[in-house]
Length: 70
Figure 1: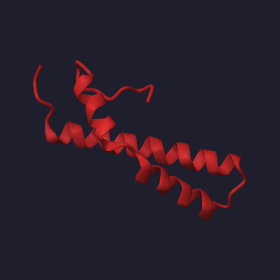
Figure 2 (figure 1 turned 90 degrees about the vertical axis):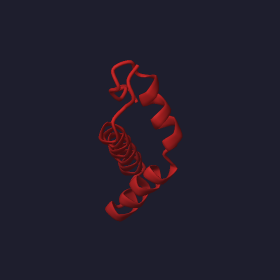
Figure 3 (figure 1 turned 180 degrees about the vertical axis):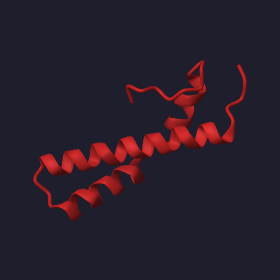
Figure 4 (figure 1 turned 120 degrees about the horizontal axis):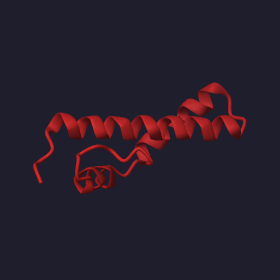
């Protein structure tokens, strides 16, 4: 198994952050928060993201691609 390039790892982390932000924003919107509240929830979702898990998931993937189901 080859080592992931730093840019590939950074791309996986960016994708995980975007996914977390979108999920947080959607959850806030469903709960009826205003736009500012939804944005705060999206940012909070990124802050709570377990980066160690994101990195471990990338290392466990044989092709180095992020798991699209996450």
